[in-house]
Amino acid sequence: LESVREYGAEWLAATGDTRRMRRRHRDWFLGLATWCELDWFSPRQAEVAARIDSELPNLRRAMECSMESADEVHLAQHLAGSLWFYWAGCGRLSEGRYWLEHVLEEPTPYDASRLKVLWVLGYVAVLQGDAVGAVSALQECREEAERSG
Image 1 (spheres, rainbow, N blue to C red):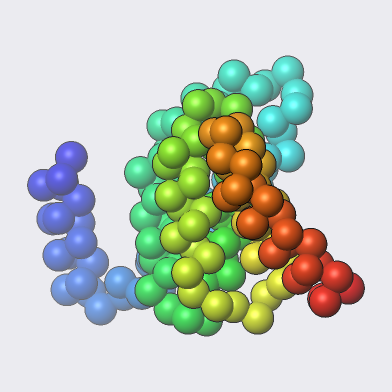
Image 2 (cartoon, helix red, strand yellow):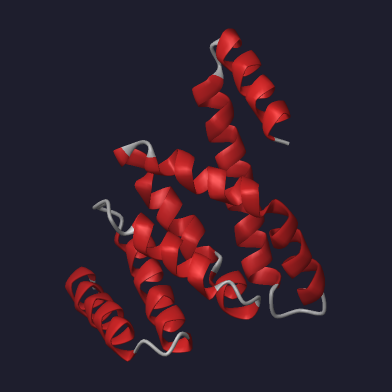
């Protein structure tokens, strides 16, 4: 509920602990996404899909929070890339593409997180029937992978 979220945000701001708590929130959801990614190809796939579906607003907020600081953009990239199974396997191609493109807007020195986003973006573009977008993302991924070793 929006009113509950606003009340909580006001209360948190009054304590002066907003930044630390947002980081803890983000870190927890990074862990959740990583666990779900690893558990996708298991008998618990339906459970994983339902969990991500129910936590999607929190995952969005975690990505937004990471995009607020240039030093943490790679975490938003890691999170968006780790959700590849959800974007592709649960019919969220458009939203996935939005987040993948959004987290690539900011440069970051962390090659691994950026490369993962690029290959996932290429995969999503293929599934959407966008050959030009797929080739562009995958070519950039290949070039950056060769450059970074």
